[in-house]
Length: 491
Image (cartoon, rainbow, N blue to C red):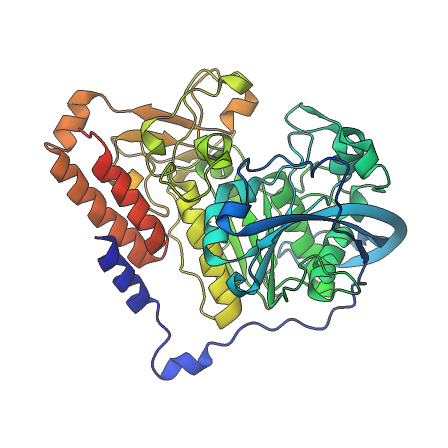
């Protein structure tokens, strides 16, 4: 089944015919962002500090290197009021010295490098640097030969402090003073320019390159959750003059961005500007649409913007906090995740977290954005999830099984064995609400839906092939998803 889906995917997405020559990669304007000094690789004492994956990179053909980045960063101030179209006008405000770190995962064999670097704004919600999207999408990045760079862009990750999830973080300097004691971050007002300079160090290295012998052909900006809020403001305020990223993947932002002072007092209802001449792909879950109120700030797709809203997903999920940490891509531990979720007792949640298909669609999002950047072929248009406006937050319109209507569809939603929601069970904490919920169907419901196992597998395979044709599941992932369905005991 997966082989047929792969053929269909390649056929429907091929660039052929008279219009093929019109597809040209977007071109960046010349950048004036300074190239910072790069020191490294850092060899000790100790090892790099990160909340990320736990497996050894060497068996999958990757290596880890850490570098220090230093220079003078600029802060910005908004000129006038923020306009309704997101096209901020800013002025340079002040300068400050900084020294932060880059963590680099890259193919050990240069021949495996696909030429694209994903630069992730490391997430600080837990009070320490967290590689949220590396955790969520590392198997795809490794499979396709991306390089990944995590940037300690915010002050909390370097200096320490309390994250928004009320988890105290020591920061790099206090976690390992002998290794990180020379780092210095002047504050989040300077984080935007520090992030730009990290990209410049990758694009135009001086004596030391964070990529070693690899040469970057394209650089993608990436951030999830809190980092997506910062990235939204970066796009609207800084990107028009920085010109250092070939495209942007903004994962799970809420209704707006941040302030140029670096405050997490969100700029409510801040749209993405779409005049950068490079692609912006917003990837949204059910939680982001409702609890985060993104549904009230939707904007239409256009030449440079795509909105992917994925039904059955939550802001954080079972893969990100469970098997995703140790999934090296060489087994199918992710395929059957929907059948074995457990309550997140580590953060005090009493119901099972969302075990939905977010990571599969995230794979397709990175692949589509990279193709858009490198070839000019735009990402697919994603249908929107059906919502009902109202206070205090919009609500998802659900079918008789409890699953969302509309949105990007996956076989886990169209051939369901559970109800997948971005909303946690009643009575959960604010933290638990970010993880949504999974509610298994009882045996009678399963038997009514799927009289035999063969019937379930046939329906699941057809739904998988449809998602591949639509461009929201990759053929390589389809094989894993179908194998897990075939190996299940449904009904």
